[in-house]
Image (cartoon, rainbow, N blue to C red; front, side, top):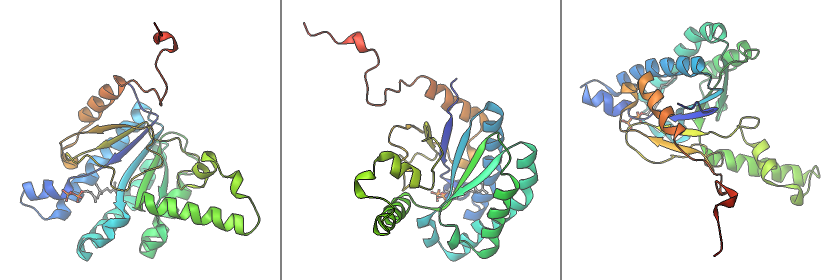
Length: 241
Ligand code: FPP
């Protein structure tokens, strides 16, 4: 089993799970939150350094208002109940996404949790909330254009590392492994730039059914991948005769 330094998860399938159990969609989110808590704890225990969870996408604002309100309630409750546990487990909590769009009290709970855990140096837990990768890249382009307009830099000075360091994930290594549950095999506007060389792991299981054992299976699979980052594995392999 190989432990990725940075694991990113698209926790998908809460709604379908609830439907299968003849319960309202929001019940799937409640169950999904419990699973997220177990997975966070296990990642911390296993020594994952960064865990990014896609908790709410920019597009999720278009869900029925009652479901959005419920997801906000879950976040509010999670932050209130879990901040002390995060500190106890030495987990640093940060967020990527448009925090300004969140209800004011949720946004301030997010900030409070970030401040409360800023000295923790175990697992870095990143919630992607109101996050969309195209929006993130657009903001980065705007920011750089403004810097150029203000004479702070020139266009020639822009290289990949300039962009990397202006994304909301600045300072975080790109994900080694991106896991998505529920059988969908797409990124859905998640970490598009950062996923350039990520390994992908898809499972048919719905997020509320995902277990710590499944996480370990994913890590086993990840351990068998050969990551070449566009290069060849052994330089001497190629002969020209
Ligand atoms: C996708 O399932 C899930 C979401 C949009 C929300 C994910 C949020 C949680 C699991 C709660 C996590 C929150 C914390 C505080 C850790 P879906 O509703 O898109 O499922 P479906 O595709 O089956 O409809």
